[in-house]
Image 1 (cartoon, rainbow, N blue to C red):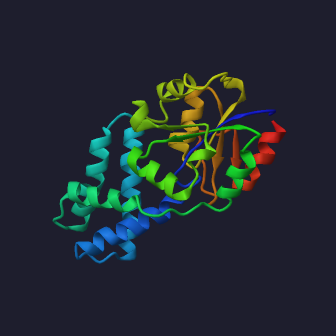
Image 2: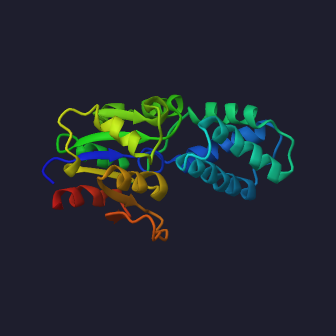
Length: 229
């Protein structure tokens, strides 16, 4: 592909959200006198993903996701903690610091001048912008598209159409989305009628109902893939 329109997800594709999540959750629980046991640190992400998938399916609003995930988590743990207060503190802690996925910095540098690169994220705008600022990567993207600001979420076709409309000279036939989420990124690519590449570093099993055009285990595989298209 001579010059591709590359749409990159942020969380667990460029920046290590799992590490940020674990760090913020540990501090938030500790501040409330709740021991951040391995069981709790492992259980919350499962609940969190379940709630975000309901947002992607249009079953919950963003507000219901943000507060509801903590209400469900604390209820399951038998703890009387305000889901809203926990969410507010947790989100404020997510602003602090950043961690890169392996090879992410090198990928962003390698893409510069070769392809047109865009960011697409469902995360909270204030959190994502703060993390990108901390990581020093905002200038790596021609445009940054965050669903909270766009007005609809991945994987809806409308989200992508609104993004495409803001890109001069956009050509759907030369576009590809790269991300770690089958339900958000890959399904989004299918809905938008563009190529999709599943970044699957843990070698997770796929799904018969959501099939990516390509799959990579390491980010350094992306540039050769683009050059081969």
